[in-house]
Image 1 (cartoon, rainbow, N blue to C red):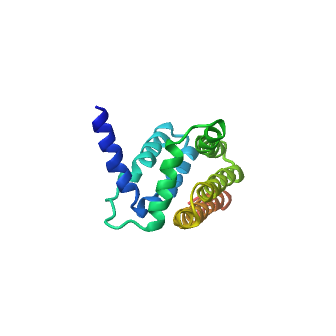
Image 2 (cartoon, rainbow, N blue to C red):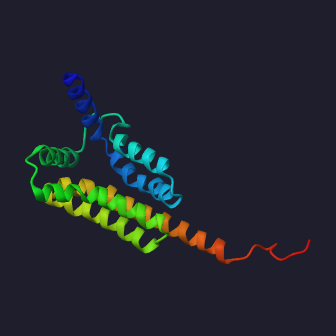
Image 3 (cartoon, rainbow, N blue to C red):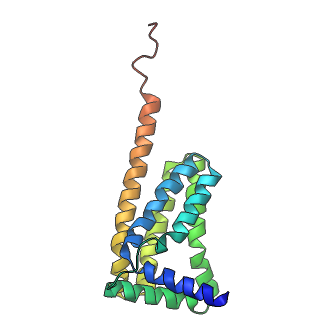
Amino acid sequence: MMEWLNELAAWAWARHHNELSWYIRPLFLLPFAYFSYRRSGWGIAVTLVALATSMAWFPAPEHPAPGAIEFLAAEREYLLGEWTLAKIAVALLVPVMLGGLAAALWQRSLIWALVAINGGGLSKIVWSFVVSDTAGAMQLFYPAAAGLVVVNAVVLFMWRRRRVEHVVPSPHAGSTG
C-alpha cells in the first residue's frame, strides 16, 4: 500500500509542474464563492475536492519551466521539512481564508468576501517569495495575480448585476395587462 501511495504522489507531483494547473487553481474560488453564496454545503465540498485534485488534471510537461522546478522544489522542501508552530500557523491561513470567504458570502458581505479573496491571494504570493528564490516566486506570481484579477472582476460583476436586478423594477411590474 505504501509503495502505491508513493507512486501516486510521484505521478501527481510530476503533473503539478504543468503550469496550467497553477492558472486554474485560483479560479476554483469562483464556484466556491457561488456555492457559499447559495449556502450549498455539497457544492462547497465538491469544489474543495476538485481544488485538491486539480494539480493532477493536466499531463506532466516534457520540459518544465526552470522557475516551476525551482518553486516546486522549494515548496516540497518546505512541506516535508520540520513543522514548527509558525509553519502550522501559516498552513492554517488556507482554511481560515476559505472559511472566512464562505462565512462572508453566507452572510452576504461583499467587503469581507473581497478581504478574504485578496488576503488569501496576496498571502500566497508573499509566501512564495519567502520560501523560493525570485525566479521560482515569479513563476507563481503570474498565475496568482491573474487569478486574483479574474476572481475579483467576476465577483464584483456578479454582485453588481445581482444588486441591479433587485433594484430595477421589471418593465412589466405594476401593469394590469
